Amino acid sequence: MIKRILLSLVMLLVLGYLVIAITAFNVKPADLVCQDIDLVIKDSVNAGFITKKEVTSILTNKQAYPVGKKIDEIDLKVLEGILGTHPLIDQVECYKTPGGKLYVEVTQRVPILRVMGRNGENYFVDNKGTIMPPEARCIAHLPIVTGNVEKSFALTDLYQFALFLQKNKFWDAQIEQINVLKGREVELVPRVGDHIVFLGKIDDYENKLDRLKEFYRKGLNKVGWNKYKRISVEFDNQIICTKKK
Image (cartoon, rainbow, N blue to C red; front, side):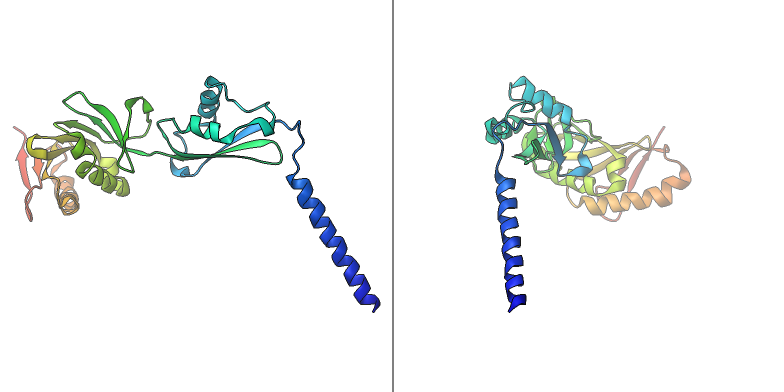
């Protein structure tokens, strides 16, 4: 009987403690002010694009910088709307903590192509196949697309090709420029080797580049990387090389 009474008392004490703790956790003093901003980049691989300094600058310019303001007076939706206009931000979520901090969680837009067409157009294409303006000031190493490039071609075939390059370490490092010729034929300018790679139509590019990589390994490594001025992998089962004069 005594054990049951003691057990009941302990349970009541635990329950009372939990009620008090939860209540205290949720009660925010009216004069609690925001102490700091913590920036969380969800895609940490590319964490260098958006910085805390940039977030601070954007909010300050819009007279919405929260540090020093009362927590209860900070409108999270307003902050999310302001930060969401940044050309490198895809999604943003802000929330407050009981300790008086503001957490800003950012999902970045990741550029994978820089387009500088003959028609004067200048923009980035991100990893979701949407256009980013040139003022995005992306610092990433990206292949540059030049020549007769239409926006519809950049956002479809070239976008898919850029995704392939991004996932392939060798070709991501090797391809410096993509030049679009008439009829949407494509030639590539590599970083290593003084030659142009002609793909022809941008189809079956995985097999074309596999053959080229094998030719690099078995051919150019022996005869030299500057022997040819043009290497064509347009046709199946063959590689056509044009020697320098």
